[in-house]
Length: 375
Image (cartoon, rainbow, N blue to C red):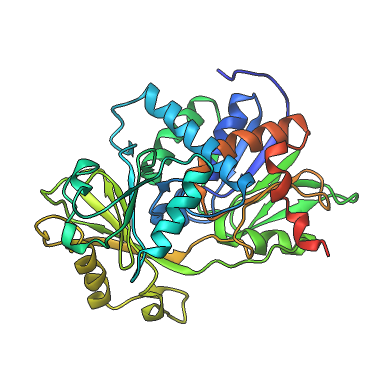
């Protein structure tokens, strides 16, 4: 049963982690929700995200605050369900390429605003996290004890159980969707290529790297900096890894079933796109990435790919999130961000608050789409 009652009909475009989270939070508030996906649920960027839960490195304090709130919501979920195999908080390990100055500067920055950041090295890494190969490390590394990871496909499946229990309507494989407006310019529904037209009192556009294209016909410009990226999943290995590792040649996180999820960006030049729009990469490049990941693990276990996914990684043009209602199109809301995993739960919560109440949420103040139109 919904926790609140209202009669608002909301259409959510996008079946990734933020779209699903928003839909569930809206249902909890009593809204009537239809969730519309272009293809299968979770088949976009959420299905190929490293999904490292963090606020490491340098960013604006407003963005840091939002990410820390995002981590807080995952910690609440973890406290309520500590046995979930797809959500863990076992820390993060980072080091920079070539010299230690970048690592030490990052540590100083993190420490200056109270982020849990320990400067460590090869000689004592085992005191912080197991099964890291010391010989692969730089002289200086950072261990962030408060970080974790989530498997977004599992999170989406878990949230969708509640979605259906609360009476949400799911329309998969609807094809391309556009926002419909009435004579006053207010959002009044969604038009889809395969599922026809759906009326709504509010529309949330949360379709990852396609979000700028969906709102562009409404006269709203959001610069799109989304690059092509890949996530590789390995066969199970016998060496347990706990921390998420971000290193110069491979980023690695644990994954349910004793597997690993691996990505980076150095291989982007090897990705091509067919005339049909399908992304491809030579298998030897995939194996090279896994060989780089293997070097990070004690005993250098042989890593073999069970599969990989390639597509656009959502990143707004200035790197910062875009959240909230559009002034130019009342009733239309957007969610477009690089940190979709870390922000999925908090973004869904705050977007639902704003959509139902009609009041702009203060945590979105610096992340509105209108900032791109300011001189």
